Image (tube, rainbow, N blue to C red; front, side, top):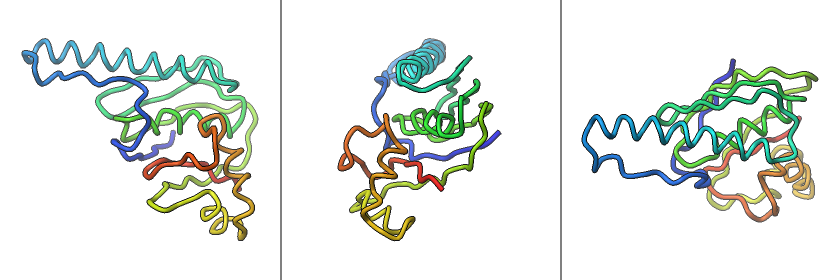
Length: 159
C-alpha cells in the first residue's frame, strides 16, 4: 500500500460538487455518500474507457480521500491510475492498494508549478529539455498536448 498526496483544488473537474451546506444535516450526509459513490463510479468508468490494462478496478471515495484497488498490467498502468484519480478536483490523497502483474521500476512523481514546461522538467530530470517527449509519452492518455499542463498537476517521471 502506498499513500500519494495531491493538491485538492488543482485537479481536473471530473465531477460536479453539489452544495450540501444548504441541506439539513441528515440530508447532507446522505447526499455526500451518494455523491462520493457517484464520483468513484465515474472515475472507474473514465479509467476503464482509457487504453489501460486493469482488472477488478475499484475506486472508493470518502470526503477528499480515494482508495484504489485492482490488478494493473504493469507499474506504468498502476501509476497512471493513481494520477488520474489524484489529479481530479477534490481529491487530496490516494491510497493505492493495487497489485501489478509485471513489475518494473517505480517512477518519480513531480508536481507542476507556475512557469513549468515539460522541457524545463525534462532538463532537471534528464539533463536536456529535448527529452520532454519522454515525460509527455509517460503521461498519456492524461496529457493530450505537451503544452497543456497546469500548476498543481502531478506527472510521472520515468526512471
